[in-house]
Image (cartoon, rainbow, N blue to C red; front, side):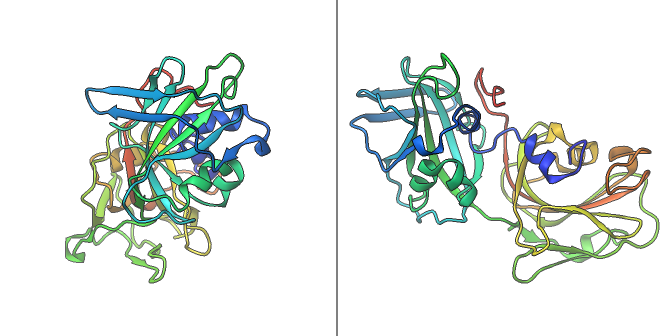
Amino acid sequence: MSTKHSRSNLVATAGIVLTAALTLTACGSDNEGSQESGVDPDVDISYDISDDTEEVNIDGDLDLEQPAAWIIDEGDGDAVKNGDMIQLLTASVDVESQEVRAQDFNAGGSVTSVNDDLASQFPQVHDVLEGAALGSDIAFYMPADTLGEDYPAQLDIMHIESVIPNHATGEPVDTTELDTKLPQVSLDEETQAPIIETPEGEPSEDLVVDVLKQGDGPEVQEDSNVTVQYRGISWSDGEEFDSSWGEDNTGKPINFGLDQVIPGWQEGMAGQKVGSQLILSIPPEQAYGEAGTEGIEPNETLVFVVDILHSADPIAGDDAAETD
């Protein structure tokens, strides 16, 4: 949780939304109708990005007048469906120099949802992603000045790595191994959204973290950007004050950097693995303290159930932070 607990604030502080370039395009382009999809420029694009190499080759002239997206290499996995949440590995390339300006291939990539929101903001990207096979490489081209005056033409290469589930898929931990002082958690049979019982007794004065489902994915680091589902209640009365799951329990996962959230989340999530579901009991000193905040009383202990869906290191590249 951030210094303000609302979902809108968490979304605003996300380190990676779709990609840095897409975020910049949203700020720099005021003409949705000027974006192209279904194009196939007469150009060959290849790349080799690894821990030791950042090489991109653009053979041909990219002289499109409007932003456009197309498939440069078809994968052999299942087709992406509208509504899927996918992991993208992205490299942003200066078209003229063919140099990689930023990339997250080595950092775990980023997560985006292929949905109506994406279609309304970036129809050309949505149209190409929907129906594309997992493993495909996508090109997203932006002419000079798209991202701002005097900004060079840029090419984003996006590799569709995987579909991300919208709930934790780890192995359930035996209830005999859990802290009996923490409230019990059940799951909605249809959506897998957590239902947290009202806590009983006095809360611990220390941070308490239990793993309800043990994932086997990458380990979350202290400065990771994470994608999660969560539900939060007050210990004192069991009232929900915040949730990504929504009233219908279908959920809309969110991304944020662990350096943007309250200390209880930072300490409680670091070292945990993607695919895990956690329950955290966070004392006021690691939450909102004596002041409280909207919807949270002063000196309140907070209880969260968190599904860790994805984790990535901060994006690499000198321009990675320029996303506003």
